[in-house]
Length: 186
Image 1 (cartoon, rainbow, N blue to C red):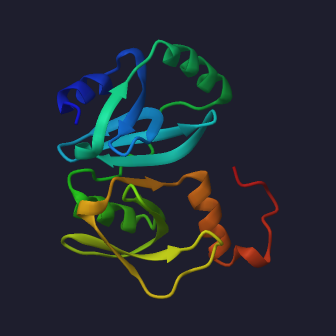
Image 2 (cartoon, rainbow, N blue to C red):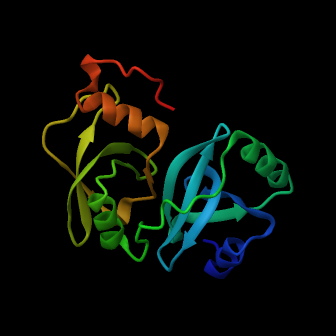
């Protein structure tokens, strides 16, 4: 686990700006703009394939490492050229603890992607409990699953919202499957 104070220093802007790469204990890496650090979480504006790809919330206990590389300075220039920059649009996300996090996401009707290092579940938040969150899940084919899935907080390695994948899958599952969008979802 990384030292929270190192992340807080990076949040103030490191030698290569606040573009970072975070590695979680499961080995997955995420790149993006560091937006927030609490005693519980790291909040990252995810950047993938030169585009803004939602927000990633990673429990601090699962963050193995983070880096700010010299190459990030060049990447910042390319991102600026494509119109991608650090945003404040995720300031509403409460990263103080799990219940507060999921209450803030539910209040905005945000679809979530939850990872436990083995499986990923995508869906809408139905209820926030003391030690878990209930979601109405969508399968990989864009179908709503029957019932709800009770996802314990202690199992959650990452939470993602507003990624291209999540938004397209949710739109399809939400009834848009019968009418293709007249514009490209990007």
